[in-house]
Amino acid sequence: MPEAPHKSGSTDAEYAKAKNAALRLLTYRARSEKEVRQRLAGRYTEEAIDRTITALLRQGLLDDAAFAKQWREQREKFRPRGPAVIRRELQKFGVDTDVIQEALSDFDSSANAYRAGSKYATKLSVEDGGIFRRKLGGFLYRRGFQGDALGQTVERLWRELSDS
Image (tube, rainbow, N blue to C red; front, side, top):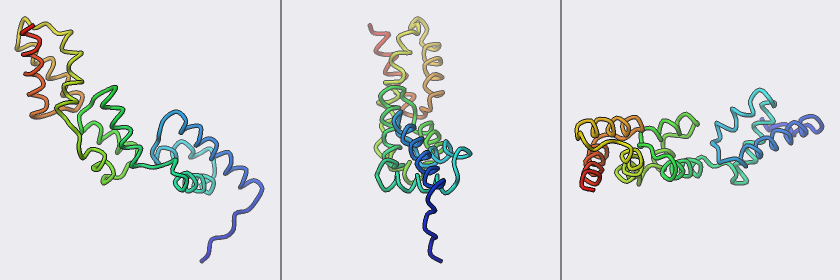
């Protein structure tokens, strides 16, 4: 059955308000489709929200793949986290699993673990290697780093700081 044409008047006004609200949200940072939909829900009609999402997708202003890539890059630059944490964050934003996988495809856990741990490690005492390793390892683990990336980073930072 063909879709009924949009009614003019209050529906168009509602759509305009919803779109303006969505555009305001997008000026602060990129957002996922689900996130925009959730932020508009309850304030605007479902039809206005659907029209807004469709328009933003068509204009390229809403793109989950670009959002996921940008989120990952921001994490790497400002608050490094392990891939498991970034994956959970993106899932919370409603990003599709395949899109997340693509965004994390060339993720360098070791480099990110080193960036995350470097500043914290300088605050730790290097008098006792066991305490240093336990504290730094716990810090990195809480940020989502595991396995070789965690262990190698702890050892690398221990060597660098205990030698100086």
